Length: 140
Image (tube, rainbow, N blue to C red; front, side, top):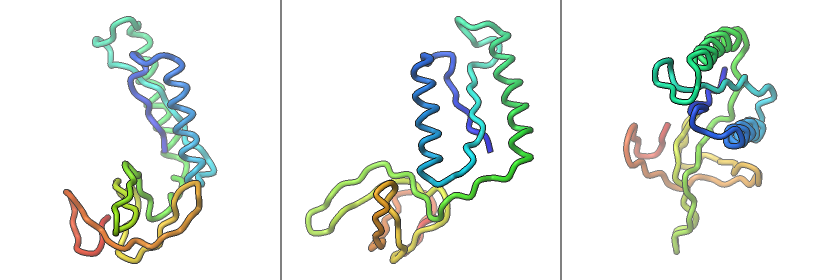
């Protein structure tokens, strides 16, 4: 597995460093022991303003090389289910509501969910799917 960070050509060095730290922290939070290789890329050759074509070519070569290295190693196992939470809010009389995308596994009514860094565990009581794959009592 590799992580590709784009927009290196328009982000400051501080922004890229901050984003890279966030990615590493996210993998650690998920319990992934071996952090995947992180490769920064910028615009393809010919569309790069302010950077040399050599810089673009180097990014592409590093991506190809990194991809070859990554394919020989095993993929980290991710917790299941794994949800990227977009929003969380309280609804009077209903409790807390979370919105997000299921990244790994599936969730059914009654599935026990661990809430990230708090390690708090709760049971899902209902599911509403706005678009995409739908099921009456589960989503994936």
